[in-house]
Amino acid sequence: MTAAGSRGRIRVAVLMGGPSGEREVSLRSGRAVIAALDPRLYEVLPLEMARDGRLLRGGPPDAGGAPAGESAPAADPGPGTGLAAAAAASLARHFPGGREVDLVFLALHGRFGEDGTVQGLLEAAGIPYTGSGVAASALAMDKDRAKALVARAGVRVARGRAVEAPEWARDPEGVLASLGRHPGFPAFVKPSGGGSSIGAGPAADGVELAERLREVFSLGEGAALVEERIAGTEVSCAVLGNRGGRPRTLPVVEIVPRGRPFFDYRAKYDAASCDEICPARIPPEAAARVAEAAEAAHAALGCDGMSRSDFILRGEGLEPVFLETNTIPGMTENSLCPRAARAAGLSFGDLLGILAEMALERFAPGRGAAA
Image (cartoon, rainbow, N blue to C red):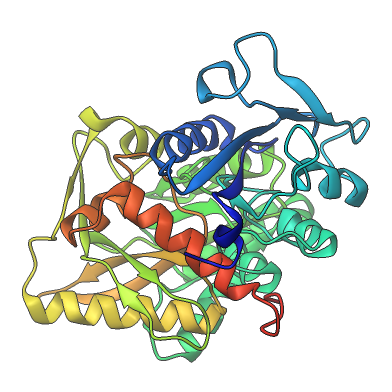
């Protein structure tokens, strides 16, 4: 048991919800985490971040904690979707009755929860939390910069470039002409800073490319990433480990959408729309290359805790081509990382315990908080 646990059960605040487009997925992750944390080891406080940034102690009605209709505000940061540092300090510093929290388990996805913002507030408040630190979270969320770092680590990445919203607004015809030359068609478009494939999709020609770019920018995104569309098998690989330690990869998951053109939002969260096969149906040497590339991405971005990197296996040689890294992947029972953990002999509760232990280890006295 950890030092925190030597005083009794480890007090964990599970933070979920938030203002991003991935809010509903986050709530599902949070509920699953709450249900799976071992009550013999952890005392759990559900915390929901509302769309306007308010924090509700007790979480959603079906997340445990306060009964339906009795969730009480834990902090009120005022209007907007921001969260003041004072609110961060009060959000998880105390359980009801004034007992201190040992750890925040982050089940937030997308902007504000996965981009380093909440991580920075928790660091300022001196509250340990699961997952990567501020810098790694921000880098992984910026898909274009993440690709550059991963490429420098020797991993092949998809050809393409980011298009900034002002550039598109100023000269859409020029942007389309440039993208037609590089990366060319077919292309794939996604928000440079979003997740869960919201706003993402293929473009066969300039007309579809313009439609995709308009869709991304209509979501309020500051940049879109336009890449070559690579034919091949899509796979995902999770890595466990803090910086400076020995990383552990989980079995590779193969992703096969059913009747969908790609692994879109519906395919990710509707079991009937996708087959997620683990271990992946690829030769052992190909799985080893994927694992090596996922470890390289984890290290290049400076990730802690768990990351999940996605790849396309190109050509007969099944060469892994890096797509992106997620620092807070989905954490429902049927999400990719828990599925891979089961294939490795770890229950969902085991996986959560490992993440909690790594977080407490990272913030242990003398080690310093993650950057």
